[in-house]
Length: 453
Image 1 (cartoon, one colour):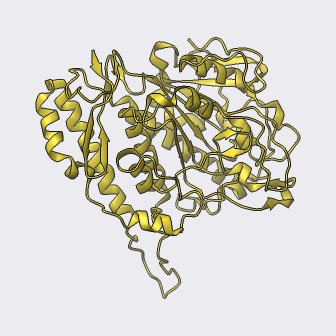
Image 2: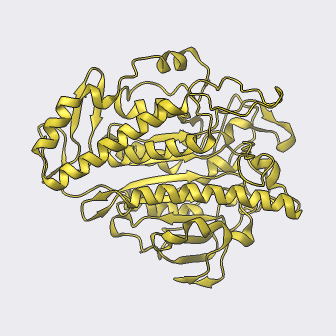
Image 3: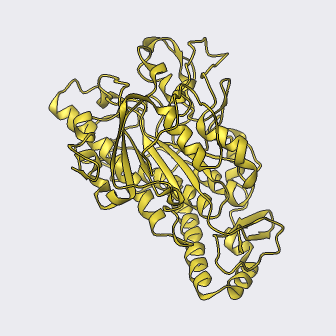
């Protein structure tokens, strides 16, 4: 039998280690698993895609790699394209805000004044957290990049902007805060798992600033002696795996420290002043996203959680992507390209950048050996958007892909085409079943999605 989780403790640090083959350090009182568990990650990209650059020609295993999928070409055997899924309850309403909570719930989002939010349902990840979350230190793990917005979008149908700021909902009235500060997300794994998520409420709150000023000693330094003892008791395979894991933790710590420092920039006659970065948020958006992805991988690798979500941007993400070659503007603004060639090309570049980050995540997960396969083999990674076309707000045939092998329950490397207007919630039911949770229905489902295995 193999230890599910080895724990190294010291001075407020509780550091979990990867799944080990030799079962060393097993006297921790935790249950034992005979094989790696299954994980589910849901990654949300706002503002849709350019349909012609997403949907390929060809069928089954013989389909072309389109421009949006080009960054994933080397991984085509590790994911499947999912087509003709949609959320019918989002049709004919606001272009963005109510579509976000419906992405993982299928619910009908009510138009309210903001003080009485109603997302229409509990999201997939939170239902799983309620049913199987007791099996891990963190029932679920919610990550993002943007702080929640407030107020009513009067120009966009009168919906509260908060609806598009949260991907996860514990129930129709309760959004689940996401962590947007990498250091605090890291702390939730290793230092203070039960602390509230403060950065999604106010990134400049006193609680956040106080947390960032706490002891920054490396978690490895705190538990160094125990780590050495654990390594000495393991097999050669375990020792190599632990060395790789400890280096990953150390690498994230080093990058967290470096990302907080202002970057050196060329100052030209005072026209390019360098403002002091917001506390805790990396100055580089690329580094911000990749730190969050790395932390999510650590959460899965240590079995600290088996359910995670990552919002790469809120409903109308206006993040400025001028750091990309040829791009001058923000994501949402450029998504309404009106088929102007130059604007459309910039929009396409931003979407391609997002699929590059997905490729980064999948490559990292694929490279981590675990049991009879890799971390990716023992995971399901759902990626997509709540819009097919960002320019015209098309809801049908959402751009979606599902990566990983789901512990042998998924057969990637294919284009899977469901009947037109198949409820997205049919897929949610299929993912739930694979995670060990069987429901008769979910959202607007009409049955369990077939053809994935």
